[in-house]
Length: 188
Image 1 (tube, rainbow, N blue to C red):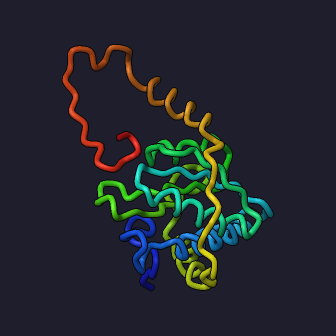
Image 2 (tube, rainbow, N blue to C red; image 1 turned 90 degrees about the vertical axis):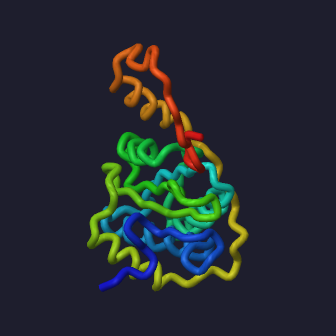
């Protein structure tokens, strides 16, 4: 069965278009909370979210969060962070899920929604299939002016930074020239 909303790496597209907009983000948040409640047999699942620097990220997180909260879930935002950092904070922060709102290397008009399991990995194909179907079953909200999600979980990114720093010997890059292509990513 083909997926309607999810592609090779989450829900992606030009922000405001038919494949990615605030209504779809709300529906994805709602569907995710419902599935996590069933899967983990809990009433108030915690999802950690983060984003890259695209302007649409704040609106997508607000819509996603409104949907997730509408089903009793709690959202903690770590703000602007790289996708691997978000995945690691999900694992270290004892959340049942995570979400990166990022368009990766795509043009700034594009964006995406990538979910993570509690261990910081991508959802299984079977979970993504059920989630995709569930997004289609959620009604699009009439109101799409969602309240912003405050970045309240930023101290958790310290865990990620310390892990990355600990992976390299001090002075490893001394005397080397470094070129960065940050495009629209969180590290820019």
